[in-house]
Length: 375
Ligand code: 8DG
Ligand code: MN
Ligand code: MN
Image 1 (cartoon, helix red, strand yellow):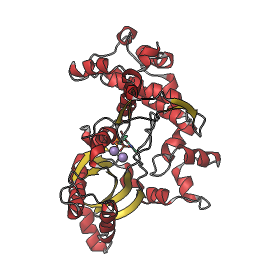
Image 2 (cartoon, helix red, strand yellow):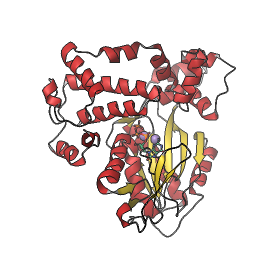
Image 3 (cartoon, rainbow, N blue to C red):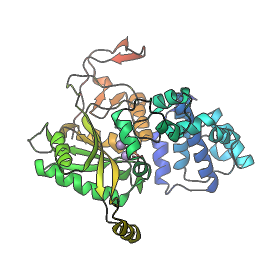
Image 4 (cartoon, rainbow, N blue to C red):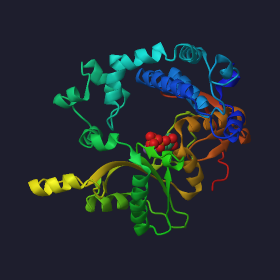
């Protein structure tokens, strides 16, 4: 039923409180199959089917009991027909023919390779695939392609960027970020967000949220930080996004909306002591240089202090949790949550006005939305 399409937070919380999720071989096999299916739908830009499998994977992940038969998933939310078919097949046959088909699919394999490059998304992959390109080697060999600055960096530091960031590396970068920020704003709060704040051991990047609790604000802070790293030779790439937040602006109703904070998507050079002495000695012998650093993707986001709590919630993720939280706020609490504030729709003096946005989607416009208290 449609009631179950919403992730019921109380049900979810009950599962979390019931203890650690119970893992079983079969559950991992199911989650892996769902993730492959979701990814393939993402590559086909079918957001609805993609989300269906992502939600199903999230539900299984925190299920406090193992799944061994169809009866185990009875009454669970987010188990639509497409999902159930795969569960049934995996329970009976041990694997999913559909997921296997996807894994062997040429288009899926190419998109998987292409999107592993920083700066390459589904749109670019589609373009390359249509041009007949199938592997990253073929892309690299094609010098008619116009790569963006971001994609060039993506290829240049490819090996480092696909190898995951460890917790130790995150801590090392965290020190660098804190030291640099505090040079310019001594009282600034610098917090790791993203996967590492959720307790993950590895990540694809490191996310930071920066705010200043004091009266002082510095619109130039992020520029100063980045400029210093440039001078120190630590900045390998930087894409600065200026803030587009307007106080009177109405919140975005899109479930997947990004925010309007000033931010920087960067690649930093993290110097690492070499553990492996043999290559060092070899290099001394042959007078070649040994690379003693690793390229690391870093996201820096800066927020006004009153919006810090909402930014922290949003940037902590996961993406799926954020989506569900916003859906819950909207449908069950009649509120609107985004990375800037929480708004109560019932406190509106005037009813919302329906209008179509540029993409032709219906939106509700509230003229008198007042954000609830911030930090
Ligand atoms: P990972 O890096 O370990 O792979 O996982 P992650 O840390 O959860 O993912 P992320 O892509 O680094 O994003 C961190 C969270 O921030 C994610 O759950 C969604 C949220 N988020 C926003 N705004 C934006 C945005 O503009 N871009 C991205 N990439 N994420 C955003 O709230
Ligand atoms: Mn991250
Ligand atoms: Mn990130």
